[in-house]
Amino acid sequence: MEISPFFSRTERMLGPGLMKRLASTRVALFGTGGVGSWCAEALVRTGIGHLMLVDSDCVAPSNINRQSMATMQTLGRPKVEVLAERLRTINPEVELDVRRAVYEEATAASFHLEEFDYVLDAIDSLAEKAALIRHALSIPSVTLFASMGAALKMDPGQIKTGRFRKVEGDGLARALRTKFRKTGGIPARDFLCVWSAEQRANRGEERAEKPSADNPRDWNAKKARVNGTVMHATAMFGLVLASLVIRDCEEKYERSLS
Image 1 (tube, rainbow, N blue to C red):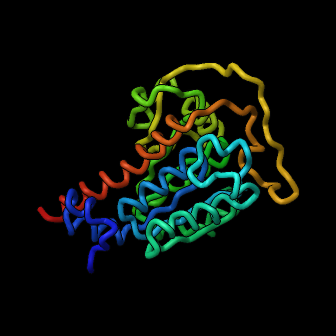
Image 2 (image 1 turned 135 degrees about the vertical axis):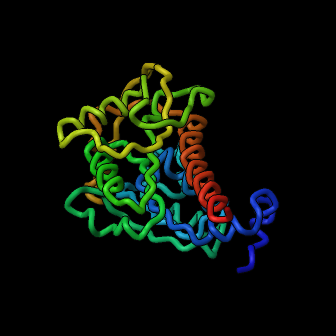
């Protein structure tokens, strides 16, 4: 397999063997917003060859402050379609499976998670997030990485990675634990996540967008409240989430050589 010249700087650092492994790695990404869109871009720019994008939402004005594919020209279009177009301009050879859909227990089988090496959770709707995590952890061959709450964060220096069971001070992680306890208990299998204990409060007025006729199943419309965000924090969550995949691929590749 010949390494594309697009990845010459990456191949210089990682080596041809790991680049070939990245090209054959299959990743399923759920949620393509302020975290997921940057995660997707980082994965494609680093050489991941197969990526499924799942999101039901369309680009809204409030997305422009933090989502990689959100511009004045893409307003009203499905996020996954616009993001896929952007990713193909970066690497025309990347294999994309684009799903404008909501993950939920009733449709879980349609995503065929068992066919992927990694499942990435960048969903911020609690019920769907909990269902996805539980499903992914039930598949031994799948490695799950998840993002906790990126809203109301300002300092990228406080972003950490760690085991879900040891996360402290993250509101979404706390709500997720409560959800798990009410729906069968916290999964026995732990997983790595991206999180921050930074605590901030909203200072401005809430201007939540409502679901439209073209966008009735928006994940965001299910939120109890809408919190403020800044791109340099949400993007960093996404970049760190992508790094977990790359670093895990590297560890597995190095073990295969020993």
